[in-house]
Image 1 (cartoon, rainbow, N blue to C red):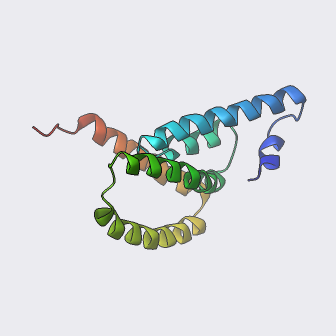
Image 2 (cartoon, rainbow, N blue to C red):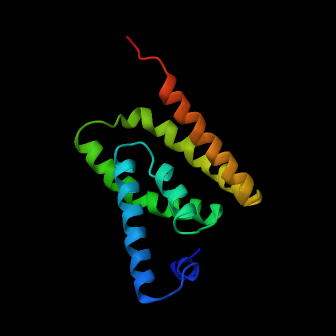
Length: 138
């Protein structure tokens, strides 16, 4: 959904249009901070776009991928400068991830938005529960 489509969800009065711009900026900022930490900005961006900006699940995930590119590049530069990236370890993950992205995007495009949202929510719930209850390594 393009920016014009997002504004169509709201009355296009000046004040609401300004509020939407501020809201989208805030969502992007929080998503960027979380992304830079390596957590994944989509965990913030996708639900915020759906619940606060009225975007469909498919559009939110597409927007997330578009936002991911510049935030990932900046984060990679910072983490690389701080010697936190092991490129030999990352290379096979990148190649397999690119192949998986093709499969995943084809799969996501073919399923109903409601199912895609439930799968995304289940994934977030599972990861959240894992983080809450995992045992620390000694």
